[in-house]
Image 1 (cartoon, rainbow, N blue to C red):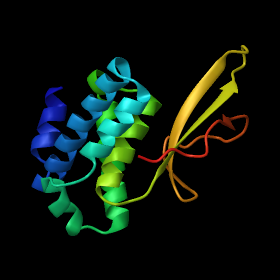
Image 2: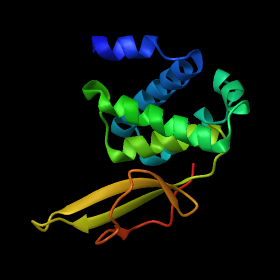
Image 3: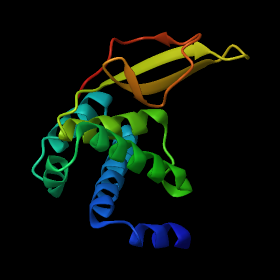
Image 4: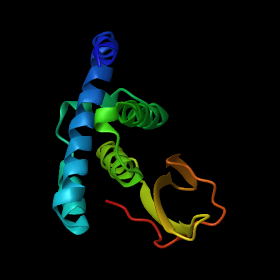
Length: 151
């Protein structure tokens, strides 16, 4: 944890801001998944993603690709820390809320398949158009059970 703190302190102010915002959002999502209904969580995240934060100024100076890359970098970095490791659903909802804040349209997709033991497994991934942004999967055997959920 000391190394992670040291790395954090060496980041630029903009990266610290983004990482701090993503960490807070990530914690809201993880706790929300456990405590409230999915619909209520989506409504909460819609409200949170409306803007009016320092991130709005951050977004004004960045290209769309840099915003996507920076957002996904922050989410992956947070999920590398054992204390903050989360499910694919939590990662997707965090990324979707953050990218919506930057006016980048995305859709959360959910799919199921049976593993080698016959147990049903679920997975969530995030797409923007045809491009999979987060939690890319080998599509063989996965059966999508939604057409994409937007916040």
